[in-house]
Image (cartoon, rainbow, N blue to C red; front, side, top):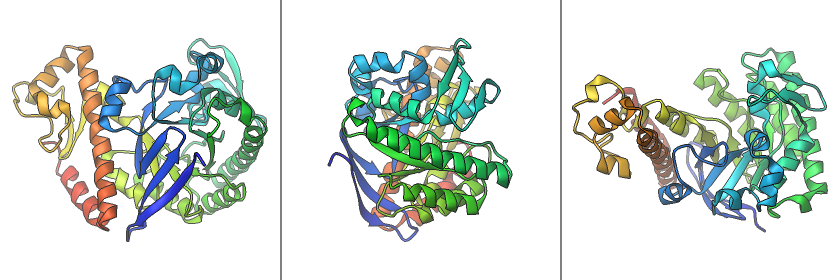
Length: 378
């Protein structure tokens, strides 16, 4: 089988150390996936990502559908070949992007009519269309099309979202099975996505309904959409309690460095977030002692490396003064170096989390790291 998941060790907190095998390589879990929205992780070459040890990237169905188009990518051999990336790829379903277009969309049981943020043209995205696009892209892991609801949402609104998400998941599964030969990646796996908003009973019910559909992996969706961090971890734990222990679990769109271990302790195996590269482009750099806003004048004459605990090439080579100069001068290299460091930092945290799980010491690692971050900017 191309797709397999093995749990190697379980920490006293409930965190899992695992290995996920895909058609494009093995992923050590828990894993952080850099976001490659339009077939690129902004500011980083595929070679740089490989050198950083990235094993899996996230690609975006909505954006790649609008530009350059999934059929063009299909003709060019699928997303792996199109972007010259040898590792694994997970594609989201487009559900979150459609959710974020609140003023430009209309949701029905059949799907979502939306207007492109690029040119205003009208499009229809259904569960079947989402899978058609992802099969053309040929990702290793495709996601079902779900309805990501806003926060806060009352019980009735969240219940409607759960009902629609389950029905769409069923339609995605049926379409994927009936059209498996259309995928540019024969080993493509399809993950279900649980919803339920901030309502524990709906989170459990959504998870139970998705488990009945027997997906090879599951995601916790609708997290980090504005709710407090404590609530997001609570809802994640409620869902993972129901999800099968022998399947990979993915929490979507999280989080800050000091939050990653919190989700891992909920039994999560995969996560993604745009924060490393988005914050990098805005001069916010993550370090082992807190965030550094590199544009601040205090760094103008600072000869120290960005993070003395970090061994990435940026921290080994450049001073804070130089990084500030690049950022203030709006040089392209600022985004490149800042993004390189932030992605390296997130990957390093996940590596340390895996090591802590291996030794049964995740709680100690998490407490020490969070305390250091809380101490503030170095």
